[in-house]
Length: 316
Image (cartoon, rainbow, N blue to C red; front, side, top):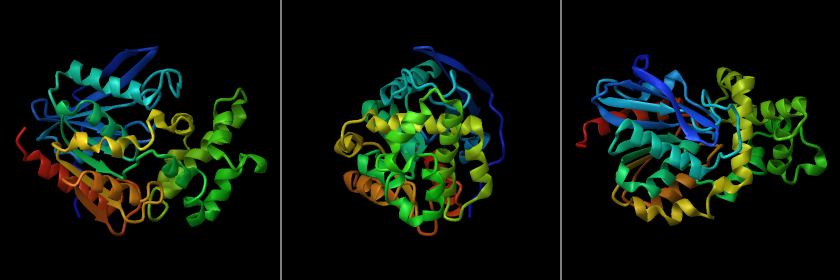
């Protein structure tokens, strides 16, 4: 099994003023003359971490990471105003122009796969290739699976804790009920809802629940951004047209794409990866037969590292 590359520090970092009162944090690592790759984090609202730099050979890649609006170190924290998919796509394009990148590899998992796909459909001329993990198509059925009924049948014990902040008579529309609390004036209710929402995802992201992952998701700073921004996007259907990603998949026919997905992914079930692969028959689908959702599952990590190594040898 492959392992992450050694820890590295950025050679450059800063903030970009993207308008509407938002400033997004970005950093660059690895080889300034290397092949450009953009790490697109999940959530939405998840933010980047030092481990995310380590999926790429620092001798081969110019590695760029950024925190999406309201997430991680971007400012203001957990802000929902002027925070839509269209804004995030525009932010990526502004970042590309500022960094003078002609085209780059997009590496995205979960919501990061969603945003990578939508950006690539908007700017295919600036996307060299795609490495996608834990495909999330953001259809209503995909949101309902995780936040209404589906995963609840697999994790009934964890589900009890997820629904606990919501009155029983509101549980037939959980995203709506959570949105009311996460955007309400009651700070105690807001933080309780944020913690429950985020812990639910942390508990279910690995094939075997990892307590250090749960602790990270439970941290108030992370939980508030993750819960508020995710709920904001999901109540608005991710600001996408119905089935938009699959219907526009033909725009990506000339872009090499590898899809990596855990067989037992309970956050984003594998049917989403399979549907994307069928809509993009030129893509390569790697099914990790003993894995859940997280990029750090050993089998998924191994596939990701081998794929970034393989892509590093491609002509750009």
